[in-house]
Image 1 (cartoon, one colour):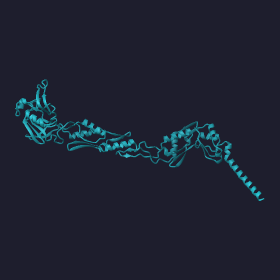
Image 2 (cartoon, helix red, strand yellow):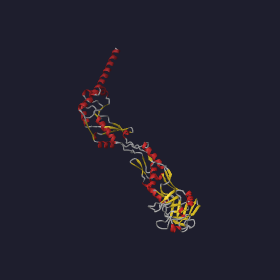
Image 3 (cartoon, helix red, strand yellow):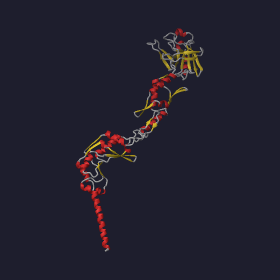
Length: 454
């Protein structure tokens, strides 16, 4: 009896469970039998839960509740973009989506997400960007390229959280057209620096900058010097279109100022004579004269190579030494009044002799001034019959100015030198010397030895 009662109770319980399961099955799967989408279904980012195909098509075409999900720093931002998008789907394609949902999905209320490519899509980019900007938190830091500041110090790039909307909008539009899921991690769409401190080009620029900073171009003028320092160079460096540019117009001005300070060519000098006190000298070919064009080119070439150097300017003309006294203490002294020549070496008189200088006329007088020996020749013929009206052979020739005048032996004078001979039988401007004295002077002087005529 007890066994029958237990069996009856068990049967009733089983029937109740069965009826309960049957009810659950009916409730959970009614959409399946009614031709509707399951209770939790998304097709191309449109919620079509429990809708018929016609209802789903209408909702999808209207972009009802059409949204995307944007994630920033782990937080999700659902954004309804239906106001900026219009789509058109095919009825048959939507119906085929319905057939892809399994009975188990209906029974268990599984979340179903399906993608369907629209037949036609129109996206208003400006409106879409506006919607996204209004929905997202404000930018906290803007991306910036690495650059060199006004003091030429390298400032590293900044990684901000500003969004590259062009790339993001292009991706969203492409996914809408393809019917893909619309979920995006914003960190993937931040603007990126185009120039980074670690870039090879930046490193190369930094290396070039350091070379300029460490440069030194020194021009020597005896004990004095003029220097182009790295700081001076850097004042003329700038960045143009991402490139380091050195402007060089200042170089010519630097050379011009250097020439004003150190040129002595053509300047008036004071000279202490052997017997006539101190005289004022004007003119002559002795003197420092910087070739500004060539010196400027020399500096620009060194700058182009970032090469330091201690050097001298390029000269058009030179003197014996630098400083206020560019004659020095080794020179040839010629007195026209006394018709006498002295040679001093390191301040000591080495030799002297009587001479005959040019006839004191405008076209034959010996030119006064501070000159210099610019050549030495043996066995030389001077003048031509056609031009000068004479042709004379000398053994020792030492020219000292641009008028073709120089010191040389004059054997045809037969030992008669000095006095007033020059007034009636002077040379054509040269300093005639006794042969043995010309030979001695020739031995002592060198190219550049000053010749002072007064």
